[in-house]
Figure 1 (tube, rainbow, N blue to C red):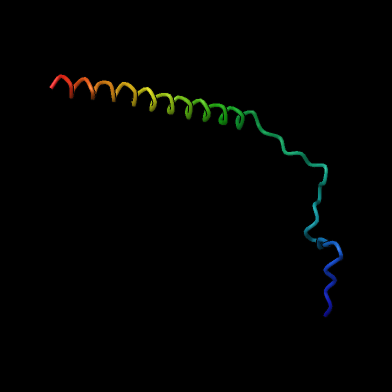
Figure 2 (spheres, one colour; figure 1 turned 180 degrees about the vertical axis):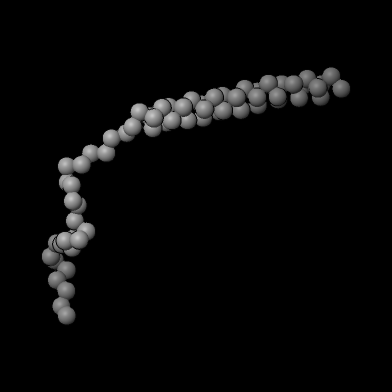
Amino acid sequence: MKIDTNAPYKVPQEYEVKNKNFEPKTKGTSVFMIILGAILIIAFTVAVILGGIFGVSKLIEAIAGA
């Protein structure tokens, strides 16, 4: 069997796209969950940064006071 490597690939009929003009739409609840997740990630990041800053300063005060 000879394979022509210069020919473009032809997708079998059973795997071709049935609806070529389909555009997926995001539901309102999905958008809400994405925004809520982003807010929670930002809040967690800010809390970790502020906790690190204030924790280190309290640690330094405790060591210097001892």
